[in-house]
Image 1 (cartoon, helix red, strand yellow):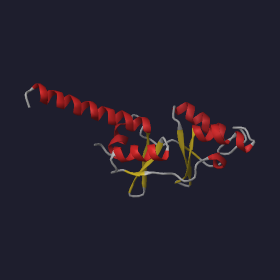
Image 2 (tube, one colour):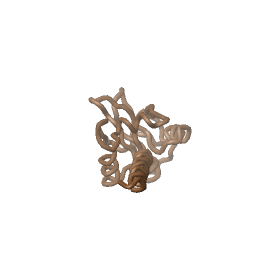
Image 3 (cartoon, rainbow, N blue to C red):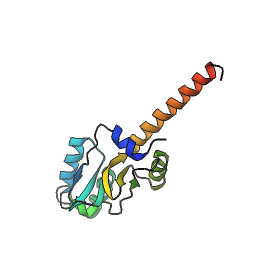
Image 4 (cartoon, helix red, strand yellow):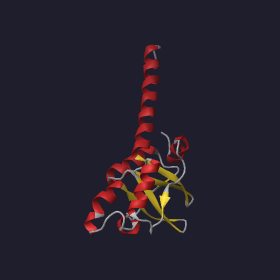
Length: 145
C-alpha cells in the first residue's frame, strides 16, 4: 500500500494553498474557488494556525452574526489540525479521515510540511491499487496458477 509521501508526488497540484488568519472569509472563499479546493491551511509566520474548510464557512459565519466580508478566517477556522506523517500508509490516513469525519490532512516529514492530501486523493489511489491487484489475480487465475 502506498504512503502519504507517494500520494503527494502523484498529485498534479503539490504546492500548499493557504491564507493568513487575518484574511476575510470572502478572500479565503475566492482562493478556494480559484484553486478549486475545498479547504485551505491557515498559516501564521510559517506555522499552521488552523485549517478552513467549506464546511467551516457554511456552518460558522452566520452563527457569528457576520458576513463573509466581515468575518476573519481566524474566527471560524478549525484550530486543532490533525495531520499525518509522510510514511503513514494510505489505509491509516483513510481510517483517520473517516473516524474524525475530515476531508483534508496535512502531511509532515520531520516537522516540515510537505502538502495536503484529501479524501478524494486517497480514495483514487486506493481504488487504483485495488484494480491493479484484481487484474494481477485475474491474470494468475487465467494462467492456471
